[in-house]
Image (tube, rainbow, N blue to C red):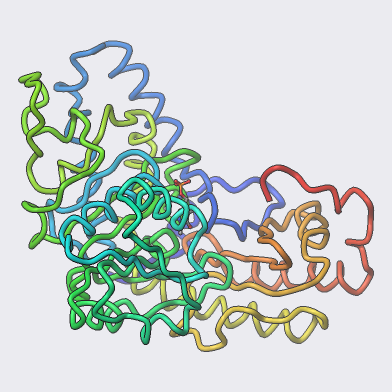
Length: 398
Ligand SMILES: *Cc1c(COP(=O)(O)O)cnc(C)c1O
């Protein structure tokens, strides 16, 4: 299949006059979502009431959708499920991995990781006791820091600020050589670039669906457990829907079948309806085509910005092979410049202390958008249009 990017673009609603370079934070609305969600509400919830759990297949959706996501990330069928938020899925994956290495007590991560992953790890280790340690090194020091002391290597493949991409295969191999397990966060990978969990022998992975998978704000997270661990991994958050037979209402917990044990409670049916419609877009797209085009558009954006925006410094890797699907620049007035840009219809985001971040999402972005965004940015900088008091007022979400 060769991806028809005109068709994929038509599958999204983008507000008039907007160039959306923030699909790495919140994907835009797929056109099919409102009707799908309305149908689920009206015909399923409305008409079927509680029988929807069986008749509309709500109970099976976390596994069905998990498999559809699994195809994008190289997971074996039946080894991905959905639910909760990514922070919670990271916690579950890490807890399960640590329990598989009971004689070791160090979790290794890097300081490019998303803070929530580190917070969750810190919180988990605190409950496990004093002998556990969270060791955080610089991204380029990770490989050397994987020693035989490490229980679990916990990394986000693509750095949320810079887009720097770890070598999942090599680092997982090193972890295994040292007797450790590897947990990968795919927040900025799933739907952004090809991932081969099975080929990399990843042990656990988790990711979100509201970024590059376009499920909408609050869409459920996903979790992967490698087949070789699926019968041994314990979920830590042992909720009733992860039980082998939830409707036995047995007072003793028995872990469910393979990754299904990572389910916790009632799944978000309406949000899954949105995700289901969003995943239909992927039936039209090949992730390898998406990657090729993402690199071409990213290279174009870097060229245009570097030639027309003096003062902006590229902080993403220059080599596209080690960069995810975003491009970031450092600018000391980055927050104000981003507000000025948003005011002019070009939406990116800002990451403290000084990073302007742009998501490059080929499903709905083309070369004209990229050129126009760079041109508007260059006008803002040349005219110092960012230098207005209202652009410096920090909002709650940046
Ligand atoms: C976006 C993101 C999260 C967000 O976690 P939620 O619990 O879904 O809010 C976590 N980790 C990484 C690496 C992220 O990029």
